[in-house]
Length: 298
Image 1: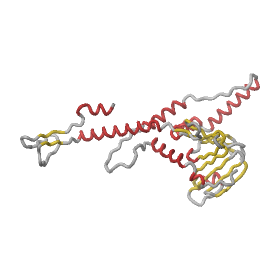
Image 2: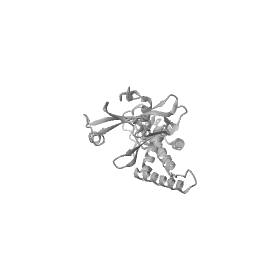
Image 3: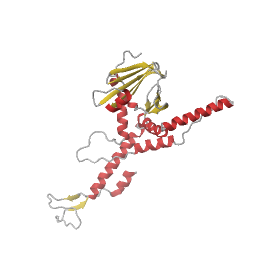
């Protein structure tokens, strides 16, 4: 099933999705302005997008619990259900899933997708749950049935020490590009585009759970919560930046001179005296008159 696979294929796969992920992450981290600022231009950023994501996720994840019910009304079934529930709570504690769930759900709200990896740790003899970066996850499904995922690739980078600890291989460079390729029958490990291991899948299933935030009909990948608040957020930044400029100019007022052909030594400072012709007029430009600040702040 994987005979024609090479890791370099991943570079060209899902390029639009990965580009979208980067743009969403940039926005979440406060990079809201489009284009480059002109020299000396002030741009204010009020990152309410991050506040909304973090707060909604915190509310969503509060009070989550689980229970295992017996499949039949008998003492033996209730005992099995109780043991299963205890085992699940042990896995929950061992993997600090409360924190992992929260972090992964934030990723899901920002990017629209998230992922868990569930494996058996032979060293500790425990279930190990991690949350791979969805930007390194690729999935293949059967035809138009997005529920039938038949292959998953996970791509990530490791340092030299990490590579030697995990895979007993020393990479040539300072970092190693790792690709895990999973089907329900096979597992392949690629290091810097070279196949270093191929073996039967020890689980008999793909140990990844890929789930969307909100799924668009007929689509596999999900939708982020950010697009619907991006333009209001940008408009708020624009409005507050304009208000900041007005306040700055009001603190350093502009002197307006009428019917004066030339002017020298016109300084706006306390106690300043201006000598102007009889028919001339001089005043300070009041940018805050007429309730402008109030109207702009509404």
